[in-house]
Amino acid sequence: MKFGVITFPGSNCDQDMIYVLEKIMGFEVVNLWHKDDDLQGAEFIILPGGFSYGDYLRSGAIANYSPIMKKVVEHANNGGYVLGICNGFQILCESKLLPGTLLHNNHQKFVCKNTYIKADNNASAINQGLDTSEALKIPIAHAEGRYFATEEMLKEMNENNQVIFRYCNENGEVNAASNPNGSLENIAGVCNKNKNVFGMMPHPERAADMELGNTDGLKIFEAMMNAIQAVV
Figure 1: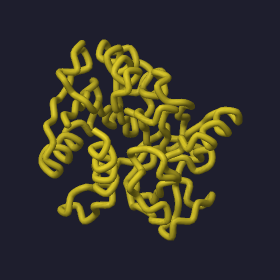
Figure 2: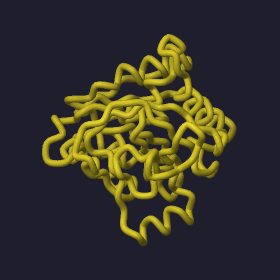
Figure 3: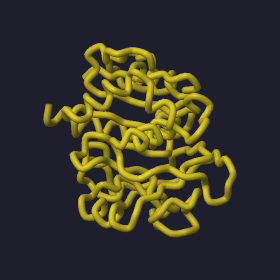
Figure 4: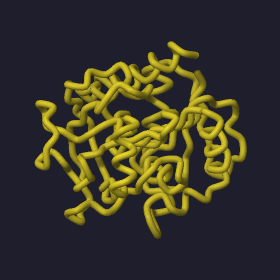
């Protein structure tokens, strides 16, 4: 499978993502520029973390109008895989490829630390092969990570298994104390109805190398690729 990692002005996790996909996992990767109008044959598109366009207006709001996003939306609507991490998640919500939005953290501060998340279900490719009782230690780094959606949207999302990850403690318990930003229902990641577009605030690419002393993020990538390659 060929991956495309998009760089927007202000992206700062694009090279981390390319390193994990290319050097650790052995996939072909093309680095896409936000002004490109061609996905260069990439089958799986990733919108990395960072601060696109300086996070002016709302995080991800300006990046949504980058030329390449027309191709990303078209790719997603045709069933292609798309993953947005942190700022990428915000961009996907702005583009309406994912439901809900990301608001300022409830404590109004930028937060950068390790958190624990766990798969809420095994209904989509990104969490299909994960143990729903296992707490994964994954870093976060954001000021606007508080997931919000209307009650109707949340009800539908829960019924459709569109919540892919929730914040928890190291024992896998989902509670208020383990919620780092005030996200509704401890939501750390969601997918679309068709389960081919995924978004999450934590950074699995920052926990995917033995040199960092934590490979919990690699478990997410490996589970996702095993699920996708099983049906390709």
